[in-house]
Structures are given as C-alpha cells and as structure tokens.
Image 1: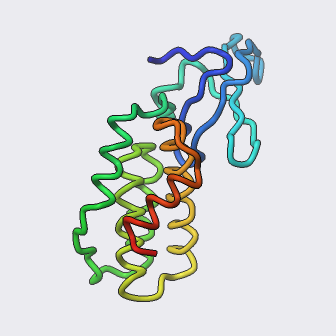
Image 2: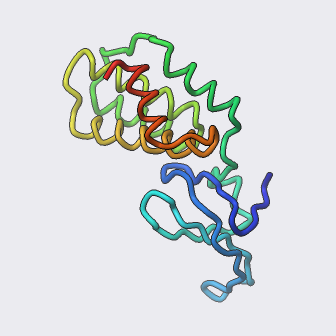
Length: 163
C-alpha cells in the first residue's frame, strides 16, 4: 500500500512508528504544488513532511503483520555468532545501514547481534545507543502488530536474551 489515510500508522525508517496526522498540499521553494503526508513520530512527537511521491524512496511502509512479528521473534532467537574480528566502528556503520533500510528484519538482526555481543564484552557508547534504538523501533512496531503492550514485548525480549 503506497497510499495512507489520516490516522493510519506507518513506519518511517530510522525513526519508527508514526501516525499520519494530515495530508496537505503545499508549494515549496516555488516549485509545483505537491501533496505531503504529515507524520508524527509516536516515540518523540517529532513531525515530518513526506512528499507522497517519495514514499517508496524514503522507505515509508505499513506496520508489519502479526505473522511478520512472529518472524522477528524467530530472528531474535537465532543465536548466530557475531563476527567480532571487525572493529566497533565498522560494525556500527554496518548496523546503521541495516537500521536505515527500514526493514524490521534487518533491525531485528542488529538487535540480536548487539545483545549477543553485549554478552561477550562491553559495548561502545555508540553500540549501546544503537541497541536502545533498535530495541525501541522493534518494541513499538511489534506491540502494534501483535496488539501487545510495549511492556509485554520488552518482557519477551528479556526472556529471549536472558537479560
């Protein structure tokens, strides 16, 4: 679905779940009038304007289905060993690229890898911040997809990672 209505929830890559609060037509910088989605990010209230013609380009998408949320939990449970030979800043860049894709499955891999890495050694400040970002992106979307509370999703994560 490329068209959203006011009140719809959508995911904006890197920022998480947003609500479409308005659809507006504006002329910006003297260019031809365009239609914009006005989004409010649920986590922090930030407002973002997205030209409706750029939805695919920026990676805006619908909330995942309950089945896709189950797939996220399966990804999190896979205990694949993280390659620790790479430097933290290289890992950080690779993880940021995955988060920016907007794919819930890529974000799940980042969260899993960072939790596994955290079990082996101390994370850098950037990695700790990224772990928090990945966790909050997933918690919000899964709670909506599965109609669970955010606390229930957090509890599930803690069970998976034995935190």
